[in-house]
Amino acid sequence: MLLTRRRTLAAITVSMAATVFGTISSATSQLRRPRLAVVTKFASSQWFNLVEAGIRKAAQKYNVDAWAVRPLDADAASQVRAAGDVIEQKIDALGAIPADAPALAPVLARARAYGIKVVLYENPTQNGDDWDVELAPIDLQAKKTMDALALNMAGAGKYIVIVGSFGRSAG
Image 1 (cartoon, rainbow, N blue to C red):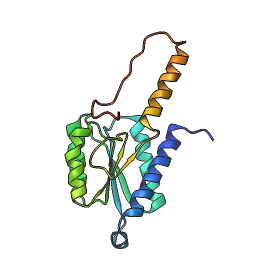
Image 2 (cartoon, helix red, strand yellow):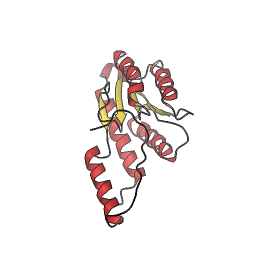
Image 3 (cartoon, helix red, strand yellow):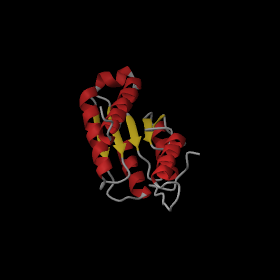
Image 4 (cartoon, one colour):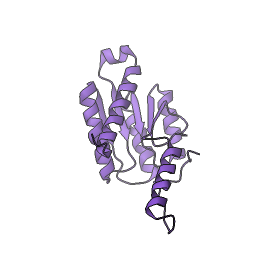
Protein backbone atom coordinates (compact mmCIF):
# COMPACT_ATOMS: atom_id res chain seq x y z
CA MET A 1 0.00 0.00 0.00
CA LEU A 2 1.31 3.44 -0.92
CA LEU A 3 2.02 5.59 2.14
CA THR A 4 0.67 9.02 1.22
CA ARG A 5 0.73 12.17 3.34
CA ARG A 6 -3.01 11.73 3.89
CA ARG A 7 -2.65 8.14 5.17
CA THR A 8 0.33 9.09 7.30
CA LEU A 9 -1.52 12.03 8.82
CA ALA A 10 -4.62 9.95 9.53
CA ALA A 11 -2.48 7.29 11.21
CA ILE A 12 -0.72 9.87 13.38
CA THR A 13 -3.96 11.55 14.36
CA VAL A 14 -5.66 8.26 15.21
CA SER A 15 -2.68 7.03 17.22
CA MET A 16 -2.44 10.36 19.03
CA ALA A 17 -6.11 10.17 19.96
CA ALA A 18 -5.74 6.61 21.19
CA THR A 19 -2.74 7.53 23.32
CA VAL A 20 -4.23 10.69 24.77
CA PHE A 21 -7.69 9.36 25.44
CA GLY A 22 -6.36 6.11 26.83
CA THR A 23 -4.68 8.11 29.60
CA ILE A 24 -7.54 10.40 30.55
CA SER A 25 -9.08 9.36 33.83
CA SER A 26 -11.95 6.90 33.73
CA ALA A 27 -14.02 9.25 35.89
CA THR A 28 -13.86 11.95 33.21
CA SER A 29 -14.73 9.59 30.40
CA GLN A 30 -17.68 8.15 32.35
CA LEU A 31 -19.22 11.58 32.79
CA ARG A 32 -18.80 12.80 29.22
CA ARG A 33 -16.87 12.12 26.07
CA PRO A 34 -13.27 13.35 26.25
CA ARG A 35 -12.63 16.61 24.39
CA LEU A 36 -9.55 17.37 22.28
CA ALA A 37 -8.77 20.55 20.35
CA VAL A 38 -5.85 20.70 17.92
CA VAL A 39 -4.57 24.20 17.14
CA THR A 40 -2.88 24.43 13.74
CA LYS A 41 -0.51 27.15 12.54
CA PHE A 42 -3.06 28.86 10.27
CA ALA A 43 -6.27 28.30 8.32
CA SER A 44 -5.30 28.56 4.66
CA SER A 45 -3.34 25.37 4.04
CA GLN A 46 -4.11 22.16 2.22
CA TRP A 47 -1.93 20.33 4.76
CA PHE A 48 -4.10 21.56 7.63
CA ASN A 49 -7.21 20.54 5.67
CA LEU A 50 -5.80 17.01 5.89
CA VAL A 51 -5.02 17.43 9.58
CA GLU A 52 -8.61 18.47 10.22
CA ALA A 53 -9.97 15.51 8.21
CA GLY A 54 -7.78 13.14 10.24
CA ILE A 55 -9.01 14.65 13.49
CA ARG A 56 -12.66 14.19 12.45
CA LYS A 57 -11.96 10.57 11.46
CA ALA A 58 -10.24 9.80 14.78
CA ALA A 59 -13.04 11.51 16.72
CA GLN A 60 -15.62 9.21 15.14
CA LYS A 61 -13.49 6.10 15.59
CA TYR A 62 -12.79 6.75 19.28
CA ASN A 63 -16.15 8.37 20.14
CA VAL A 64 -14.62 11.63 21.38
CA ASP A 65 -15.28 15.30 20.78
CA ALA A 66 -12.29 16.48 18.77
CA TRP A 67 -11.87 19.42 16.45
CA ALA A 68 -9.29 21.61 14.76
CA VAL A 69 -8.84 25.28 15.53
CA ARG A 70 -7.29 27.08 12.58
CA PRO A 71 -6.19 30.68 13.26
CA LEU A 72 -6.85 32.99 10.32
CA ASP A 73 -3.48 34.72 10.61
CA ALA A 74 -0.19 32.85 10.21
CA ASP A 75 1.48 34.42 13.22
CA ALA A 76 2.36 33.21 16.69
CA ALA A 77 0.05 35.67 18.45
CA SER A 78 -3.02 34.29 16.65
CA GLN A 79 -2.10 30.75 17.59
CA VAL A 80 -1.43 31.69 21.21
CA ARG A 81 -4.87 33.38 21.42
CA ALA A 82 -6.55 30.36 19.81
CA ALA A 83 -4.87 27.92 22.20
CA GLY A 84 -5.78 30.10 25.17
CA ASP A 85 -9.41 30.20 24.04
CA VAL A 86 -9.75 26.42 23.78
CA ILE A 87 -8.12 25.89 27.18
CA GLU A 88 -11.05 27.80 28.69
CA GLN A 89 -13.51 25.36 27.06
CA LYS A 90 -12.68 22.63 29.60
CA ILE A 91 -10.92 20.36 27.14
CA ASP A 92 -9.11 17.21 28.22
CA ALA A 93 -6.27 17.42 25.70
CA LEU A 94 -4.69 20.14 23.61
CA GLY A 95 -2.86 19.31 20.41
CA ALA A 96 -0.78 21.93 18.65
CA ILE A 97 1.48 22.38 15.66
CA PRO A 98 3.49 25.35 16.98
CA ALA A 99 4.08 28.32 14.71
CA ASP A 100 6.58 29.66 17.25
CA ALA A 101 7.45 27.18 19.99
CA PRO A 102 8.79 29.67 22.57
CA ALA A 103 5.73 31.93 22.16
CA LEU A 104 3.38 28.98 22.74
CA ALA A 105 5.24 27.66 25.82
CA PRO A 106 3.37 29.77 28.45
CA VAL A 107 -0.01 28.66 27.07
CA LEU A 108 1.08 25.02 27.17
CA ALA A 109 2.20 25.47 30.77
CA ARG A 110 -1.21 26.93 31.63
CA ALA A 111 -2.94 23.99 29.96
CA ARG A 112 -0.90 21.49 31.95
CA ALA A 113 -1.56 23.43 35.17
CA TYR A 114 -5.28 22.91 34.46
CA GLY A 115 -4.68 19.15 34.06
CA ILE A 116 -4.98 19.24 30.26
CA LYS A 117 -2.79 16.74 28.40
CA VAL A 118 -0.62 18.44 25.76
CA VAL A 119 0.35 16.76 22.48
CA LEU A 120 2.61 18.53 20.00
CA TYR A 121 3.53 17.85 16.40
CA GLU A 122 6.83 18.79 14.77
CA ASN A 123 8.61 20.09 17.89
CA PRO A 124 10.65 17.41 19.63
CA THR A 125 12.46 19.88 21.91
CA GLN A 126 9.43 21.94 23.00
CA ASN A 127 9.00 22.39 26.74
CA GLY A 128 5.59 21.90 28.33
CA ASP A 129 4.20 18.94 26.39
CA ASP A 130 3.21 15.44 27.48
CA TRP A 131 3.83 13.87 24.04
CA ASP A 132 5.45 14.85 20.76
CA VAL A 133 4.40 13.28 17.46
CA GLU A 134 6.96 13.18 14.64
CA LEU A 135 6.74 11.53 11.23
CA ALA A 136 10.42 10.61 11.55
CA PRO A 137 13.32 11.55 13.82
CA ILE A 138 14.37 15.02 12.69
CA ASP A 139 18.02 14.10 12.16
CA LEU A 140 17.10 11.08 10.03
CA GLN A 141 14.60 13.13 8.03
CA ALA A 142 17.17 15.86 7.40
CA LYS A 143 19.86 13.39 6.34
CA LYS A 144 17.55 11.55 3.93
CA THR A 145 16.31 14.83 2.46
CA MET A 146 19.82 16.15 1.84
CA ASP A 147 21.02 12.77 0.48
CA ALA A 148 18.12 12.74 -2.00
CA LEU A 149 18.81 16.34 -2.96
CA ALA A 150 22.52 15.64 -3.58
CA LEU A 151 21.67 12.55 -5.64
CA ASN A 152 19.13 14.41 -7.79
CA MET A 153 21.50 17.35 -8.29
CA ALA A 154 24.42 15.06 -9.18
CA GLY A 155 26.36 16.51 -6.26
CA ALA A 156 26.46 20.07 -7.63
CA GLY A 157 24.20 23.11 -7.76
CA LYS A 158 22.39 25.58 -5.52
CA TYR A 159 19.40 25.02 -3.27
CA ILE A 160 17.35 26.80 -0.64
CA VAL A 161 15.76 25.43 2.52
CA ILE A 162 12.45 26.93 3.64
CA VAL A 163 11.15 26.45 7.20
CA GLY A 164 7.84 27.21 8.85
CA SER A 165 9.29 29.15 11.77
CA PHE A 166 12.48 30.03 13.57
CA GLY A 167 11.58 28.64 17.00
CA ARG A 168 13.75 26.25 18.96
CA SER A 169 15.69 23.80 16.86
CA ALA A 170 15.69 20.06 17.37
CA GLY A 171 19.47 19.84 17.48
